[in-house]
Amino acid sequence: MICAAMPKPHDCARHGGALKLHRDCGFGGVSIAPHQPQSPANPPIARTGTALAINYLTSGVAALSARTGRGGARNRADRESHALTAAQIDNLRAAERHAEKIRLPFTRMISIHWQAAGVPLAGMAKATYRFTDLLTKALARHGSRTAWLWTHENVPGNGHDKGGHCHLLIHVPADLVPIVTALQRGWLRRITGQPYRARVIHSKPIGGRLGLETGNPALHAINLEAALAYVLKGASHEAASQFNLERLEPGGRVIGKRCGTSQNIGAKARKTKG
Image (cartoon, rainbow, N blue to C red):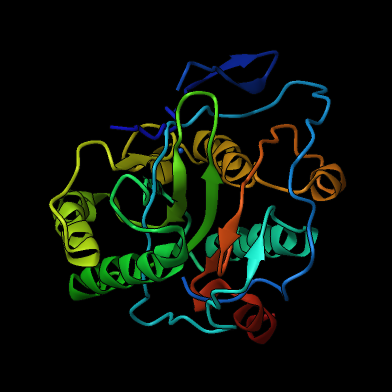
């Protein structure tokens, strides 16, 4: 069985009045931008400075959104890409900021290993869409709104063929986390039509502690920044240079949408709300 890795959260310590992130070895349907030709591989970018990054162990699934909807271009079988573009990264970063603005900050990272779950590459986008739909509707039934963004990767090689997988950042209130974690394996069975396979999904709070976004907002912000950087690591070389992304890894060939957000933090919603 192939495992996907998910980032383990880290704590901060104060040094000279600044928060410092400690490392260990450790994480819906709106179109981001028109498809653009991309280079098939991402050359490494030189690392400079101290990166506030969390090393996540990940694997991923995703789905539709209850009141957020799919939106945008549909997932065509002939639509392929090999990296996140600058336009996509700009939109994802703006979406994360808007989620904070509307008081739905990302509190959880979920990674689903679609290949290990038996989902072919061409079916990954649809699976992610269904997963976010089921998750969003479950939260709505318990009176909670949510916001989310996701990216897809397809990473072979190094003796561990991770294949197609999804990284999802989402707002899940701390008191509803037990409900989500109890349901998510059942969602995977519904989506794939197969028994759940061990270690297909990893779901962890950003920063390692439930309620960190209210208990220690500064620490949560640092860990969220690191989680977002991890999710964006499949950027093209040009995009990574433009946004000063220090972590860069090949994102691999993806069929259909490479990334998406819930409609309430998408470009149209941001423009409407100023």
